[in-house]
Length: 133
Image (cartoon, rainbow, N blue to C red):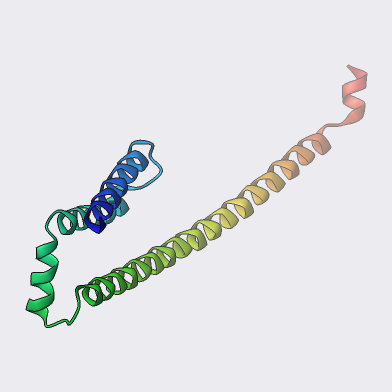
């Protein structure tokens, strides 16, 4: 019964990831990780002896211990990767905010120069010469 649950879970992961990819709600670089996880769970569900062999080969007492250890390593890797992505995004946001502030300051300075030039052009005209013609 557990084997069928593992196979169903793996197929569910693969289908959901593919659906998220097709609807562009998940980027490809993240989808690869989840597809690999789905395929590994599917292989272990179809061939449970493989987990027993890995447990014996690595000297782990129980297959569940190996699964939990692998899950913890995977979650630590995902957390580290997401922290790195967040750091990159924060740096990009900071840079874009600085560029936007510089552009806004330049635009304000240009608008002030235009206003000054327009005001100077209006001041140069002689109001008496306009009415006498």
